[in-house]
Amino acid sequence: AEYMGHFLFTQYILQPTSIMASKSKAKKKVERASSNVFAMFDQKQIQEFKEAFGVIDVDKDQVISEADVAAMWASLGKNVSSSDVSAMVKEAQGPINFTMFLTLFGERLSGTDPEDSIRNAFKLLDEEGSGRLPEDKLRRLLTSMGDRFNNDEVEEMFKGAESCLYEDGLDYETFVKIIKNGEDLDEGA
Image 1: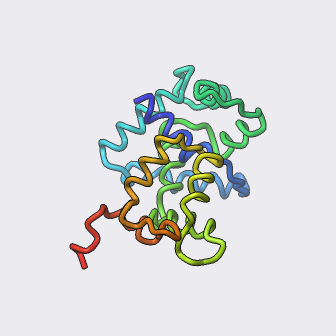
Image 2: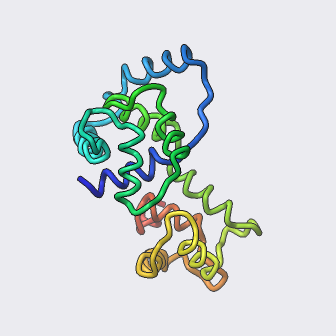
């Protein structure tokens, strides 16, 4: 549960974005989103979110506060400025109780095609537009930017990408399909 809490926290909640809305408009959005947020997830997912919420809610007061966010980052070994912590908490248009926590996830997860998101991330790195990324460049980026991979994780990723790794680089279109659908791409064709 602790790992799940850290993962959910870092991947979906702690990515500051600026949300500009009037208080009345924001309140209506929250009411609308929270009224059906439980229908967006199955019972197992809700239970996992509940466990993650419990891990993030360090002071166990049923509300994720700035102090909870700062403590979570500290437990991950990260020093985050108070202005960044404040911006993260302000993504919610009110106190982050469990329903708001689910609402934040629902907003982040709905309306996006994960396959397109992954493909677009690779396209951003493909300056030539060739559909391939040189292995050395990808290794360098994976170990030096964002959520840095260690060497073992990079090796594991490339091991899973052997069928779409060529002399001129990784065919990321095929790799994305493997990530989303598994290795047996030809069976469905």
